[in-house]
Length: 378
Image (cartoon, rainbow, N blue to C red; front, side, top):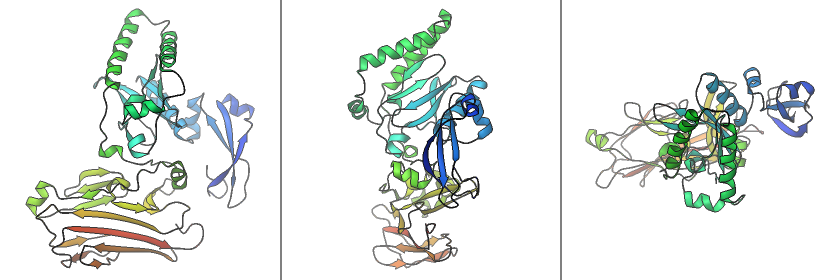
């Protein structure tokens, strides 16, 4: 949590004993923090899990709180909703879609209907993913696994038969007072879901996005930033070849790449990058702004590169480029546009139009971030 005095980031000082009021409000534990800037101590962060309605007042939390609050709201509106727990440390939800006849993956703080994002984007190695609702308990690991055989090798905590037996017993207890007709309907839905879970999924572009919430330093420490070696390459489509022009734009606010006519092609900053080091998209919720910068707290140099490649037989004739960047104090951002023959140095905020790269089949645009002073130089 931010410091209540100066709004600076705080550092953990261990667990605190919940007060009587915090216990009554549903806090099973309370984390303690201190401010490294102004020295304020005793900053408390109660984890309200057993009474999610309290979160509508506090509006503070992490993935567990977001999921709890989201499930509460969905159930209040009459939607069949599950609370999903990932044994490798994450929580989200699933909502039953009557229109599609399936459970939809919903991560309130991250994304919707992208179940492979945790392994393909965040780099997780999932083991057990369990879904809990008022009617049942279900092992939904296979919905979120991009490689079922690989996942099976990591599921060594309990024997498979023991797990299935206990899941069925828990489900039976939850439906003990349900009429037979309702039990039958739930069983049909469950069997259909089991068949769906057996079907392997293919990783799509939207699944290759790193974690979006939390400080960058925290996400880097957890290894959930997504691959920095994506090696994504932009190439002209058939229509663009016919028109003789390829247009690519990155919208930082929407965190999407667009082609000509604002057609979305890639979602997520890192998903459209050819290579990067110590660079990522930063969301400043308090200031209502987003930007690309070096990793939070990491003042080493940063670099990011985008690559554009023509198919065999095509070459570049002219390039129009507009890049934007700003620096504070002694910070520096250097832009470079290169082909295999020459390099140019575009200026931020000024449109570059050139034929000096004419005849090239590949072009790379790079930004190098450096300089600055103090711990906030990033």
